[in-house]
Every structure is written in structure tokens, then in C-alpha cells.
Image (cartoon, rainbow, N blue to C red; front, side, top):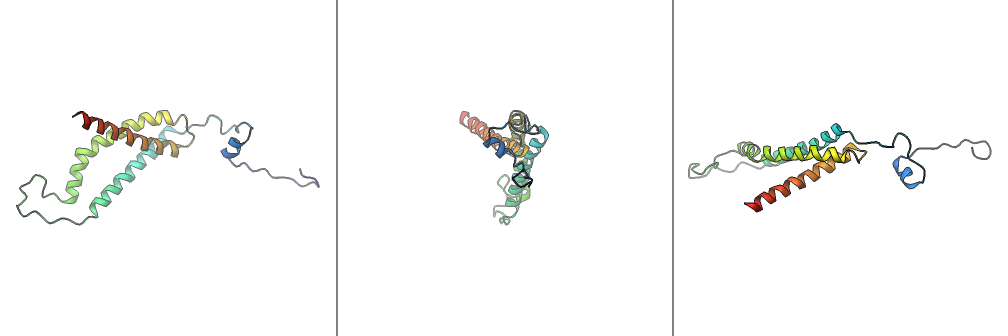
Length: 143
């Protein structure tokens, strides 16, 4: 109460207020962890978004003319959609499988430390891309 009998309103401004003060965190924020399932859905959402962007970008390029030699080269007469399907099977499935395995493991670790499933899923999606690309580079360097 303020002098004169007026009541004051206290507004909870979230974690920032708790982080800047010496007061302990409110009971609903203590020990809060990100949901494993929701974090995984966020990571999968990022993968779907990137795959959709690649598909739209690839299919928006005009078709190239057919080669004059009558398609004697392997894979020379594939349409854009056929080439995209071929690349998805040859490269996409192994890479996406690696991304999912790394994401599953990383989310199990990160979701324990982060309260937001959006942050946990995004961090794990980005980090798993880095791990898989490093593994591909290491494999290419060993060959």
C-alpha cells in the first residue's frame, strides 16, 4: 500500500526480473526443463523447412534442354523432379538419418538444461547439422 491508502499492483515480468534480482526464482520456474518430444518436433520442423526450401528452389529452375547426343550419358535425361528424387534417395536418406540420430542424442542432453523446447530444438538442429557435416568431411578426408 502506498501512502494515502492506494494499492499497488505487482506484475511478474518473467525470468529477467528473477535473473536481475537476488530473490529466488518463483516455484513454477525452478527446475523447469524443455519437453523432449516438443524439442524433437522443433528440430524436425527445421529439417522439413530446409527440405521444402530445397525442393521449391530446385523445381523453380526452368527445365534444361535435352542433350543433342540422345541421352547417352548416365542421368542426362532426368527431369528436375526425377533428379531431385534420385538425390533424395542417394544422399538425402543417409544424411537425414544421421541428422535424426544426432538430434535424438543431443536433445536428450540439451533439453535437461534449457527451459524452452523451441531453443532446445533449434540448437540441437543446428548443432546436429554441424556434427553430420564434420563427419562427412572427415569421411571424405579419409578416402
